[in-house]
Image (cartoon, rainbow, N blue to C red; front, side, top):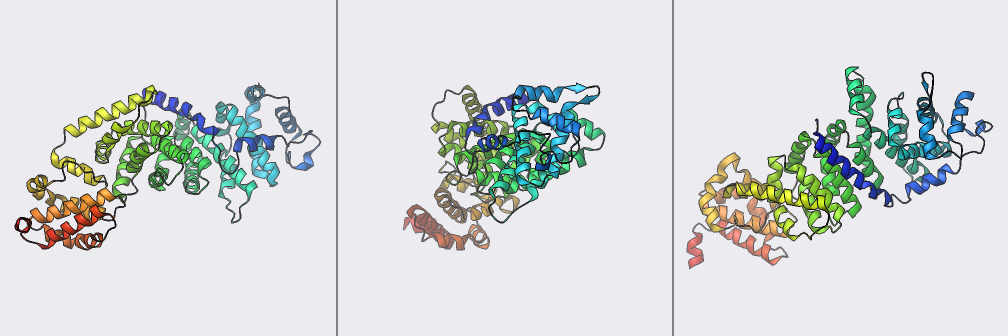
Length: 485
């Protein structure tokens, strides 16, 4: 999908702000400190140490280039200059990059391979612009994918360090792919084999790694990779949206994990198709697992401003989808906004205001029945104005549409972990049974009666009370006579 210049600028601004994340401790070691230690272990004389494996298979000319690039006195700026230098039609950077890729592929010694990975990671960190040299090299992604494919049963720290470097490097390379370069590959019909296939494999690997306890670096890599719209389809196919929903759950995950999952979500919300996929995924999920539900809960429960900031950046993009607006309203985001503390962050303040105003306008245009639909389909019931006798007396016939989908949803919500949702679902099913001519039969046939009976002994008094009242309404024909007698 093509994005407007305004959105591109907005996206780049928040990406720049996110660099504070790099200061967090990743994994059981700090990857940048590990890189520094690794790079201090290189041989003192490249030309006379070929037997150590560092220069295996290289010509003397290549060894000379490598020696110049690896000279201890060479600074980050010097390395950038060397990569840009050329002699005739030969650009030194192209040869240096290809040399490093070949060495990562050929060298089997773990210590040596780890050194080259650390150097590539450093070069890309110093100047992401040189990623273009890597992306235009021959098979630039395969050396790193081979490292990620290897899964060991034992905890091998050295191999895990290499895997984390491979994650970071591939994320930087894919995230830096230029749209004009992709267009040229597409015209040459090379994009599927040269980019899409390795990208899809990387997304599959990241989705697996992000579900493990050591998810920081894979999530950061996923965040960078999702800058590329080309990655969104494979991410969705691998149940990536569902994974983000699980990672956004407050109380279960660390705040840093929630932030990174929120950032990945924000990247997806620039893509209109992904907005539809988020809605479809939440519609299929059980009430406790929806992405938007967990995002709203994170805004409500997590105190760190950067988590709230990234969530509202995503919410603002979600305003472009009417179904997602309905979900945000139904999940009570407007009520959560009222409880937020004041902030000095201009961008966050603007996003909160924009989201709040848009949702209020949306809510104002809904009928009472549409408001109920929005709430029940969100999977989380509130103690709102639609849960009363007058509503059910006037609207009970409306629930016949779409094979009683609202009633089916209410029966499903009887399995919710949310106490208020359970209480209100019991109340609503009882009122439907009371006012609809076939209500008692329909609720029983859908399995609602059995579920409600189990809730009669719930440890929460309010739930047990509503469950008892619901069963009475399901079993008594003349409820009004019973309550008056």
